[in-house]
Length: 370
Image (cartoon, rainbow, N blue to C red; front, side):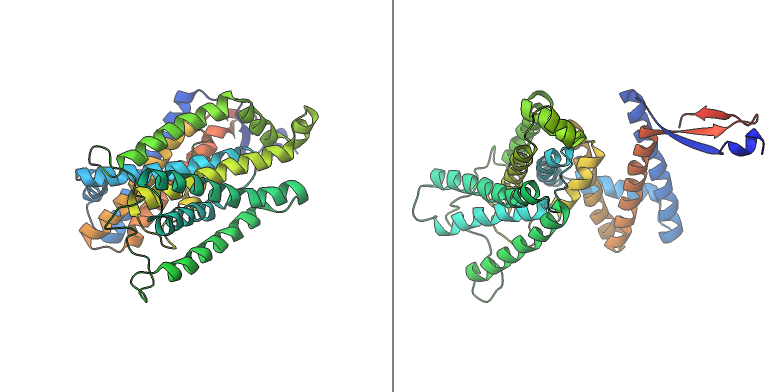
């Protein structure tokens, strides 16, 4: 057997490092290719002008000032949940329970708004709602962390199952609090008095949420990059054995980190109920707990890059709805385009992490960086 037959046609190796500008150039190229692929799909399946379809997506996100504010609000809440699950993921604790932790925060906030509205001043009610939502989310995150730390249970299944428990708890209390009776929903809580509603800034109902999450983003970046806790999270994520060797108490780090993750998810629930929706439903989180997993991974656990990935996800979602409205297509077609774009973006991460070597004519492997 000669040398040529022994050398594979394509060999994959891991990159040692890649300059940031080359990494973003690969991502930009992936987006361009995705748009071209979506244009072909649009033409073949619908016969519509792809440029008009892309224009509809932009209009759906930025067409009016209200649409822009709604987009920014949705980005803020998704970013908040993504920031929440990131410390756990960086620690290699697979927290799929963001949905349930959000619901716990929503439930605690709504409970305070309904039961305490007549017994304390509004400022104290809001403080109580805030603290209660953080505690509820933190407890919901701490439960699976405790079992993981003490008995090494499967955190993926544990956190996933707790989502269903939280959803059913919300469904139970909705029936208790339903208004009017028999409607099966709570309706707008404290609509006449606005007790427990977060104040508007400059007459805008979304701005406070956006500012809170912006501060949280900066705080999480500092926490993960420059604090001792952030260092311990990184070490535990790399190797629990190494962490134990250098004296890090792994069980304590697991429980502390999930306490923080759950509390931030609870904060997202507080912002949803007290800040914008002023009600509670079993779908109020809109699957953000699961979408945040993708946002966190796409951003490589970087809070700053999560701003961009959250914006991209929400822009595509708003654009997909507008396509369905303007062109009379069902929402599934917009989701197809969204899926294609995300597929290309996620696929680009492969070429950022790995490089391909192609066999040369001489039978030796010739390196090709893609």
